[in-house]
Length: 248
Image (tube, rainbow, N blue to C red; front, side):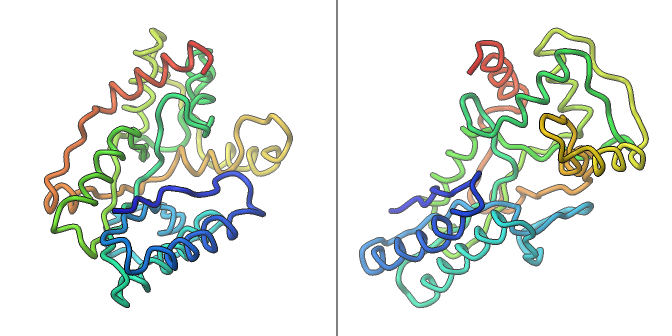
């Protein structure tokens, strides 16, 4: 059994070397030795989807260095699987979060809510596409142990609306639930103009994240592997807030 979870997240100049060439080297070493390969991928390989329910049949259209190299790494593993080198399963989570994780964007969101500076952008009911790290571990184990998982691709996400997500953060912080809502168009223009300035808290990518209406379906992994989210989103966010408070 091999769980391939290694990836370069932050340094674009290293992403191909680590995510693609590293995967290729590992595949070469694993052929005929490993019986089951579980590939930790990302819903980012589907591209910047703005609306719709994204299931595993959605076409791949990655945009960005990380997403492109993750899609290429998946292809390397898929080719090895089809050649008979080993069994393989692909898990594609949405944004993974948890205490002590290196991605600090959620800590910035927590800080904005805590300071009363957060506002909603655009119409209500945008999507918050996140999944708690412990649930990802459970899904990886299911992918590696369940016979039905061989050769399959599974999406994984714990969907909430942005209002539900931010409201839970506010409750965990014991702060008022944000109510202010501003139109998307002027906020997007502002983010486009000022978003590249060092320290500016609202780049256009953040506006994209706060206004997307895409949802990622976990129905297949639930149906085929009996997977269920063990850690509710609310408990995961409570752990995140606690980590933020202690300065992790």
